[in-house]
Length: 293
Image (cartoon, rainbow, N blue to C red; front, top):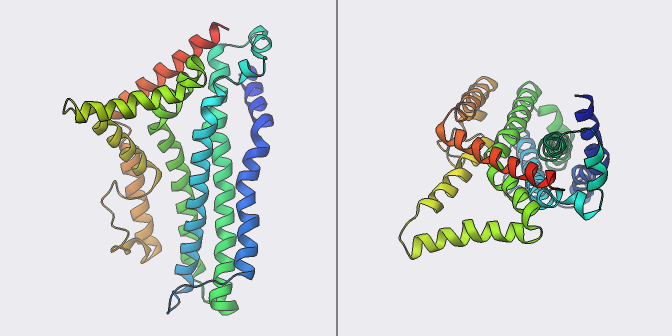
């Protein structure tokens, strides 16, 4: 366990600065824009509560997209990092297991550091929301804010978003960790080969052989990941026409609790069991590649 903590510390020291920049630079840009720029909310300005929720959710969602893009771009390179910088011999000489080294890399870079960036995103969303309320409604807007309603909503939303990032990353694990395994074995061609097999292979099966099962499997996997990431009652919530969850803290909490139950319940399905098997297989491939030096 002490060795694993040291491996986690290595990942933290190596990547923390980039993730801290990812979580802070957008806020450093957003604050001057909201302070100096023009904030327009249509002909009739929404209530202070709606302004705050809109800007907080929008900012957080934007950062989540950046976090997801960063993970997708960075992950394949992590699988062959030690060979690129010629440190693989050093790490293999240490008394630590191959699975521990890879596990620490995955845990820190796929979950812990993105969750830290998400925390910064949520805090930045609060700041941007308050500035937006000031710009649209002035100081009176802050005094009119239903803080007893807003604060519990923010806390529940933050918890559900953090859970969604963990669960969503697991659902997307076959693609992310699969890309890492392909990159470990095929180097720079790994991701391209994976995209060709899944993407081009699915198109060929559908167009030439009229077999859509591969495209259907990939589409369903992304759909379940979307349900995990965002509270949509697994596709049953209509964001355009149904604003029921915003009526009160009680209804919002019931909605969040119901959606969280659905997201967790989705883990106890054959599809998720197959997802874990694919992740385990990709993990085993990376361990095997690392063991070969």
